[in-house]
Length: 67
Image (tube, rainbow, N blue to C red; front, side):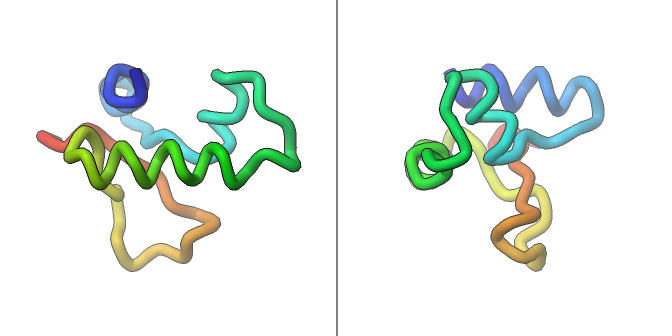
């Protein structure tokens, strides 16, 4: 599902962020760690990648692995 969401963001010339994941899954501000674990799992699984690896963690955006 995260890869599908990152695809839609990429098509719209955007990346997906931790905040986007929290909004999509209805997670609150205190559940940032859950969204981060989900994104890390998707990166480790090869479904998405970091748009700019040199960006600070709080500003990272993610795009599909093939982009």
